[in-house]
Amino acid sequence: NTRIVGAAGVGKTTFAYLMYQFAQENDVIAQQAPFERFSCHLSEGQEKEVGRRLFGPDGAMQHAAGGVLFIDSVDNLSSSLRERLQKVVLICSASEKARPVILDSLTAHFSARVELPSLQAHSIAERFALVRQFLTDEAVRMKRGIRVNAELLHSLCLYRCENNIKQLRNDIRLGCANAYVHAFNSAEKELILYLNDFPAGVSHGLLYYKKY
Image (tube, rainbow, N blue to C red; front, side, top):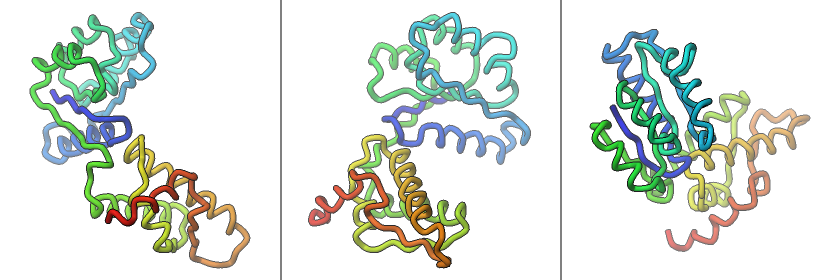
């Protein structure tokens, strides 16, 4: 069993899915084994309903049989439901801000603990690689080339993302979508991205340029 700890948006769900794929590739589980994600974000005060959706007939536990059950934000579950989880093999995520008493209660059951760093803790080279990958993903999705000027690239690599990798990806998606709309009637095969296509916070990255 594995517990993944990190701030919102650092990639806990993605990391859990990569673990699932690794298990498939190494014949730990069958190729057709399911990956079931169960979110606990809105579970407070709904213990009976959450218990039914998790453990009941046709619940997440049943859907994940033979595969991997990923419990997202397990620290939001009630203590009684967390106790029931200790009888199964699973992957779960917990916020870095979860109460220590909750994290301590999970330590004995989850033999492996993975802590994912915030986006701010990544090097500029790693951040640039993420920006390049997300821009490439959008180019493939829109079936158009993408051109980025130095000002925008510096901003994307340096602005503060409170919601980490998830925010960076979503901001790039929004910027590309805005640029696509602006150039919808253009015959150009290449889409040019400008800083004003992106959320206002992205431009704040230029304030940190001199530090690098």
